[in-house]
Length: 297
Ligand SMILES: [Zn+2]
Image (cartoon, rainbow, N blue to C red; front, side, top):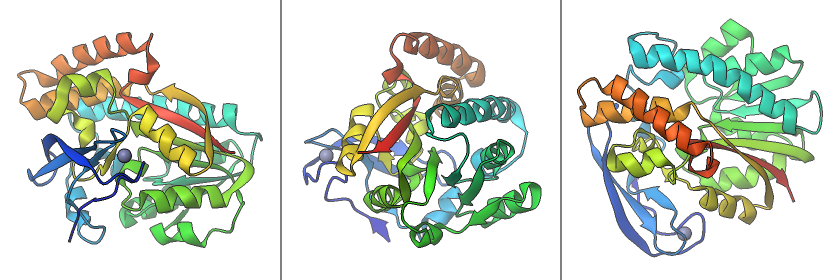
C-alpha cells in the first residue's frame, strides 16, 4: 500500500504543490515525488510505501547506517566520521541534559555505538531499533537493552531524562503520534535531541533532485529549521538550541555527486562539501544536517 498524504502533518493544510521528482538511488531506482505544503512549505515524499512494505527499500548493501562494512572511500570516511560524531553527540547530551546521568532512550539505535558510549558515561540506556539484525548486534557486542518499534508505546509516562533520535524521525510514518509520545515519556525537566537533514541547506539547494538526503522513499518528511520548530511547538516543546552537524555536508555531497554520475564524484563531492561547510560557519541554519534540542514547555 502507498501512503498518500492529504493533510500537512505540520500545519494541517490540504494544499500541496509539486516540488521535485527524486530517484531511489539506493535500492530500486523507482521515482518518488516530493510535494510542498502550499501553506507552510513543509516537504513530503508523496505516495511512499507503508511500514509493512518499505522493508525492501532498505534492502541495499550500501545502507551503511545499519551495517559495519568498510568498503569504498565513502564508507571508510563514513566510519571515521561516525567515530567523530559519536564524541560530539555524547558531548551535546552532557551539555544540555539537566543531570549528569539518568535514563536515556535512543530511538533508531542501529548497531548501538552511541548507546554504548553513553553507557560508558554511566547512563542507563535503552534502544529501539526495527532492524532485527542491528538489534542483535547491539545486544551481543555491547550488551545493550534493544527493543522493537512498538515498545515506544509501552514506556511509562515521565520516565526518561533524555530521548535521542539521530536521523530517524524523517523515516517514521506516524510523525505526529511519535512526537506526541515523546512529550509523554519525557520527564518534565527532560530533553529531546533530534537530528534531521536540513532541506534549507546550501547542499540541498545546490543538488536539488540529486541531494542524497532526500533519500526517497526512506525519508518521508523533509524539514527546514522553521518546519521543525513549528512541529515541536504544536507538541508543546520549546526549542532551546540548534546545532549544526558540519561533517554531513561532506558525506552528503560525495553521495550526491555519485547520484549525478560525476567523474571522480567522491573527490568533487569532498571539495564542494568543504565549500558548503565554510559557508555554514557563518550561517548554521543552512548546514546539511541540524541537531535540535527540545524541552517540554
Ligand atoms: Zn503545512
